[in-house]
Length: 207
View 1 (cartoon, rainbow, N blue to C red):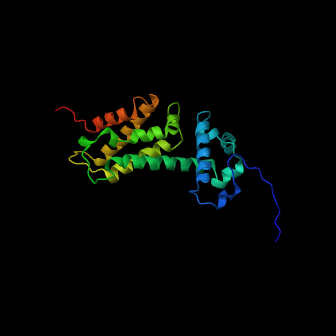
View 2 (cartoon, rainbow, N blue to C red):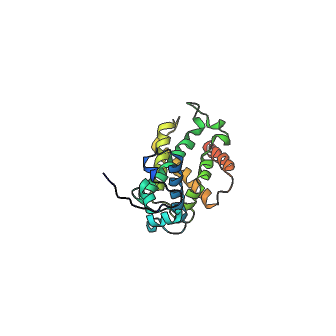
View 3 (cartoon, rainbow, N blue to C red):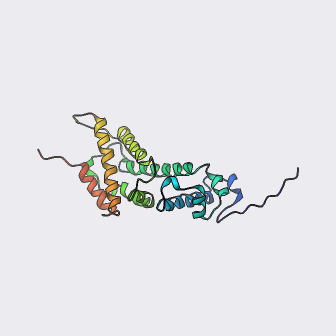
């Protein structure tokens, strides 16, 4: 059966065969990365709800066909971006005990604590919280993730109160530390911040 030939313009890096490739294809990864980076750049210029798909594809120098080949909505792109960030957070959180079932906080070294290196890896993303509220809902998502990690991975010994309260206190405390670091233009260094966090973890009030 004969098919009608339709000419479609593809922007930078577009390829009509993307639909039939594995999601791990480097070209698909590159296209998605460019769309996400363009969204982050736009977040510096206007609030989240004012950003449109057209804004994103224009910034990325693609067209809407390319966008809809990978995402149905802007929110789907943003959720995938947030999922990427959260997955890296989980890896960074668990890094100190990746090869052990037990660790002594007093024996932690700055090189064991990579959560601030993780923040620096995603500096463009976290910088959004310096002058605004960032991406709607993400703060709740990251705190919920940290609470779940504390609950599933950390065992508390000889704590006189409810573990849930201590966990919530710690999760919000770490997020507050991160926000303060962002507001200080990511100063001091990630290594220095890791060292300070270790001191906080091991702090015991004088008797």
